[in-house]
Length: 342
Image (spheres, rainbow, N blue to C red):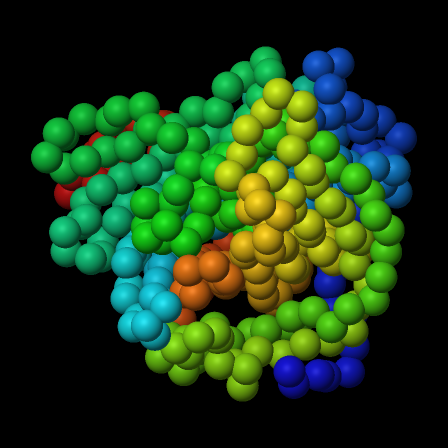
C-alpha cells in the first residue's frame, strides 16, 4: 500500500453545509421505522451527529454527489483464472432531487435518486436500457425500475437497485445492493454502530481514473501502484440480518469516512459465517462540484477467487460531468425507450 500524508480534502458547497445544520435539528426516522425511511431532511447528510448505525448508513446513502450528473461507465469482471472481460459499458444520467437547488424536505418528492442507463457495449447488449428510482421511504413508496430490451421494443418493470438481486453485468460477483458498497433499502438488516477508528483508506485517487483499465486490473487484485491511501477516521457499522428477513449475506460491515460519509470499505459474510466478500471504494476529487465523492469500486469474491471493477471511468474523456437537473420526462420510461432505440 502506498501511504501518503493525510489530506482532509473533503469539502462541499456552502449551501450543503447550511442544509446539514438544518438537518441536525429536524431530521428523524420515519414513523414506519428508520429501516424504511427518514423525514425532515434535504440538501445534506441527515445526521451529522449520528447516534445509531442506521443513521450512519443513511448518511452514506444521502452523501453529496451534486444535483445531477452525466457519465460513461464500464464494468470489468476478472475471473479466478485472471482473465479480464469488459462485461458492460453504458451512458448514464442521474439526478438527486434530494440535492436540487433549494430543495426542502417537502419539495424534492418521494424519490431521492433517479438514474437512466443506455448500454453501448458489448455488442450483444447494445441498446439495452435501465431506469431506476430510489424512494426516501420504501414502506410508503416502492422502489421503481424498468428495463428495455431492443428485441421487445418496450419498457418492462425490472428489479430495482436494491437487496441481493445479482447484478446482470457482474457475472455473479456483485449484488445490486453492493453498488456504492451499499445502496437501496436498509430494512433487511439491523445496523449497529460499533464506533470510530483510524484506518488507511483509499483517498484522493484521481490518478486511478487517468490510467487505462489494463493498468488498474491485475489477475488477482487491483494494481497497488494505481491506488493511494491516507490515514483517516471512519465510523464502523455492522449489519446483521433482521428478524423475518432474508439476504444471501446475513452479516455485513461498513467503514464510513467521517468527512464525506461515503463507505470506503465493506465486508460480507455468508450463511456459514465465513468471510465472503470485500468491497474497496475509491475517492474522487470532483472539481466541478467541488467535492470529494465515491468513485470506482472493487468487489472481491474471496470464495470464488475473482472480482469486479465497477463504475470505471478509465479511458473516458469526460469522467464525471456535473449538470443541471434533468427534466422529469428525461428520467421516465418513455425517454428510456426513445434513447435506447436510437
